[in-house]
Structure formats: structure tokens, C-alpha cells
Amino acid sequence: MANPIVVPSYLNRNSLPYASDIFYHGKITYFMPTGFVPQEIKTVFEFPEYCRNRSIALPNIIWEMCKLYFENDIETNECADILEHLRKDHITLALLSYPRNIEVVDEAKNYIQNNLELFQIFRRIDVDIKFAARELLSHVLYEVVLEKGEEEAVEYIKINSRNINDIALLIAAVIMNRVKLFISFETILIYEHDWYPLITRIRELQANEANKIKVTDTQDSERIEAFGSRLFGEILNPIYGRCDSKPKSKKIGIIAKSKIREINELKEKCEVIAREVCLLQTKEEKIKQKILRELIIREIEVPLSEMIEKPTKQTKVLLRDFLTDSGIIAGILMLVKGGTIKTLTTALEAGILSSGIKYIINNSKRETLPSDLLIAGMKNMKVKYKDVQNHLNSITLEQLNYPKFN
Image (cartoon, rainbow, N blue to C red; front, side, top):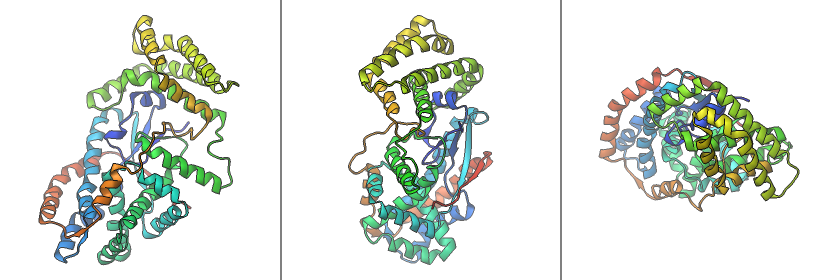
């Protein structure tokens, strides 16, 4: 099994890894923010003043995004520091290089317009506005500027923001252009769960277009793999939680190194349980739940005790609490039915219109000039940002390249 990549956005606080994922997968790949290019960063810094000097009014969301663009780097920098002790052996930080020019974004627009349900699903995702800002401005203030110049980039923004639907479609297209790259990856991790329905639907559409087996017709081996990893995570997550602080990441790194035998044994037991449950002939949920509970009690108690260095009496209490949560048991059993198994997460119900999209809509209703406060703030940020940029540039990164989606 390939090391998983975390999608769809960049390394951020919402996507910091669970300790169980470090234990199970060994190594996880995160992507750094799009646009690690001095020319792009310079253009974004100077764009508000460029427009102010020429009395160019644009939707307020554009000026908001000029500030938000740089917050990705600040947050990623903080998270990279949190994961410092894991970066050598367990965390890969990578740059994803992919086309973001007008042609490919227009292709993404056409794809959305030919599959309008994708736009409706996107509107229900609670999009991180910082992530949306980075993807949009990387497209407009780098790729479009390179192709056509700043004047044409301004005109491009105006054409694509004639109404609220237009600008929402443009943001959806630049993000969809990125998301579609991930469909062919063998193993992906989604910590920002409300992206799951969109990625699932794109995979289904691509499979159907290619006249392949539907994504829902998952092979037994994939179901077993996903079931085992999910069971492993659900057992350990209440004990170890997430790597959300530097001391905790250091501790998890030590455990991952010192408990290799115990981790592998627990993984093997989870895989044994996964095989037995996934290959059951019965369709009755109560029987499956009963068998799953019996297997967990029989197979997990000893290896879990050895891993967490607790007597079996305490381990029994932990497992009892785990087994009384019917929601967890039902969620694990959902994987037996198939679905997008390589996507190691669970689907969450989405609202009618997410707060992220509402924010974009509310800040797109009127055009304004960039304020003096914004321009002064951008100049001040430019000075402070150098330290963040220097630190990010010092991190060893893996360069990953992928062709444009067809």
C-alpha cells in the first residue's frame, strides 16, 4: 500500500494527523500552499495598491482574499513546527505542481457546468476561505498575469464577478482543478470531512466516463484494507488523539519507533478481524455487530495492552467503552457495504449552504476600492512575512508533478 496523501487543502490545523495514522501508515504526505513563487507573492502583495492607484473597484471578497492568501503560509509554518519531530521519519512535506492557467480552469468550469450537481455539492462544503483565496489568487494573479498581464487580469476578475454565481463558479473551478488531481491516488486521507461527498462523486463520474467498474463496486481487498485501518484508528484515537502540539508529536514519534512490534501486531489483528467481518455472508446488521464485538474482545485485548503498557484489566475497560458506542461500530460496518474505500474517512451530512460559501457571497455583493488600511496592512505584512517565508523555504520539500486532468 502506498503512503497516503492528505487532501484536498494544504497542511493546516484541521488536518494535523491522528497518532493512529502515523502508527498505521508509517509515513503521510502533506502538501504545502500553492504558489511558492516569489513573482506570485510579489504580485499579490502589490495588487491592492496597483488597483488603488488606478481607481479600480472590485468585489470586496478580492481584497479580503489578498490578506487571507498569506495566512495559509502562516498556519502551515506553525503546523510544520508542530510536526518537526515527525518530519524525518513519518511526515513528508511536498509541493504539488499542476497547471492553473485559464485553459485548464475553463475546462474545470465546463466540467462543472456539464455536471451541475458538483456545483451544488461544492456550495455545501464549508470551504476554508484561506484555501479558496490561495487557489483563486494563484490562478488570477500569477497564471493570468503571466499569460495576459495585470490589466487583463483585472478585466478577467470583472468578467468572472458580474454576479455572485459567476465568482462562486470561478472559485469552484480553480479548486475543482486541484481536487480532480487526487482521484487517481491509491490512498488518500481526508481530515476535512465535508469534502468527502465531492471527491466521492467525482470518482464515480470518472469511473463511469471511463467505462470502468463503478467506485461503489469495491473489491474485497480494498474493503478489508479500509476496514482494518478504520478499526485500528477508532481503537487508538481515544487513547492518543491528534499530533496537535510539538511535545505530543515528539512523544508519538518515540512510540512509533519503540513500539514497532506491538503496532504491527495490533495492525495484524485488525486485519484478521477485517477479513472475517468483510467476508461474512450474512446481510443482517445485528449479526455482523455481534460478531465484530466478539472478535474485538478476543483479538484486540492482548496486543492493545502490550502497546499502551496497561494491564489487561484496564484494557478491558477501554474496550468495553469502545464497544458500547454503537455509532462507531455502525460506522466501521458501513465499510463492508463498499463505497469509496480508498478514501479513509467517513461522510458527514452537509448543510444546504455552507458558512464558507455564505461568506464569499456576502463579500461579493458590492465593488469597492481597496482601502488605505488594507494597503498599509499589506505593506506591514510584507515585512513580517519574510521570517515565515524564510523558514518555509528552509524546509526540505519533495516536488510532485501531475499532468492536467482530461
